Length: 611
Image (cartoon, rainbow, N blue to C red; front, top):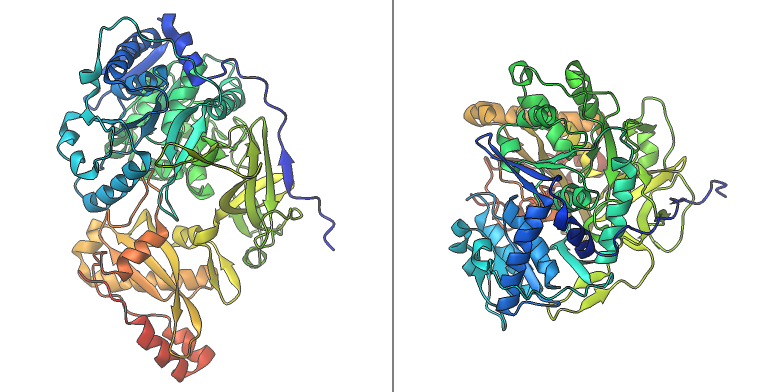
């Protein structure tokens, strides 16, 4: 019998939001000439747009939508980069009671075929009245937009401006849909998450109360996260707007090309809040040099949320230690956890409290138990539930059964931020049928703290052990010649000739240009990855597959698509550097004898990737 308390944690109730709808919050900005958004460009110039000026322009775009007959319940697809135009069309859609739906633009020529397929699927589901984009994409996107009745075509924002004066006053209800955002699609195709004004305002209010009001100075937000992503749109555009917070936006491609511009802009603008996923801190450690930080002062940086992907505490510690010499305070980076179905955030760490990692026994975790052990596996807690949010852990077999604390299971969330449901092509909503949202993530609660282990569908099971891919991926990323953050581990069920189902582990790894140029070193990378995984985790993988950069499949927010990458490889659609060799046989010889090895060898060599 387990005497531990039940795995449930509850935040205090959320006070009523100041605004009942996002539209009301936007209407409130009509006369706000002092606060707004500074848009920084690749050439280091910037443009300041007050909220009042953006509001005035959004009314003209809304008038153009009204002239076209776009109105209540119509979907407006948005394929735009971070820009004033994105903000104008988003709020213009709300002003005519339409539903804005951001879609991500192509990242370049690589992966264009996969982008076309996914975008077409999303548009078929969305059935928009029109699609708003930029000139260079108007020639590319038509092939991805299948005709459907009522579709008005592709428009640029400037084509929608109208001086028509009789714009109808929006009659928006809190339960109307304010945003359709597609889930990341890490384990399944992206789903159209329908978020009501009530959902968004609950999340916006709770996030603002957690970290905007925790600062004793004048809060200033800065972000390079794309607006088509929930962390960019909700966390770094809607939250600052609703809280009258000055905002600074820089292009995502500027950060990727010149990551030093991020701390430089924080210093120049005296930004107090600036958040990013874990990979951003790793990129800064690799790319930023001493000369990039001349005259930079980071003492203003009060809080940085680290979310959207697993947090590596070693990277965070290294980042805070290195940048301390320029004034970055220890504990600035705090964890956050959320998903598209809850608008953005379910948990956020308290400002200036840092990660506060726990260490747990690895063998116990593999049996879905959390046991403290000095020197064990370091896991970062996800922060505390934001106001109005409850979290529980349901058993893996039956999520409705609440487990005791200390056992790994399904994470469930209850909150006013939880979506209404998934949008259907006919415009109806497939409503959620439970008060508790089943997230699809595995985790546990220990000492009333939530720890997230990973996606349920990505879990690898080997010889009765439960293995979380990100642990293997962190190890692979430390091998010389591997592009950190660009490797994944995924399992594949194989039925051999004896009708036994065997789970094979595939490791897909992007290598650096220097290793690619020295092809004689490729085999050494494979051997080192295999050895490190066996030494650190006791895991014998079956295949290590080396890839060129930008080969791994990712979601629009940059998350690795484990199953899709494996499927592409098995279908011969993933270009590999060299033909991989089966490397799991040695272990099988010891465990099962040569006959078992031969039968599995025949099956495992059937699907081969084609260059």
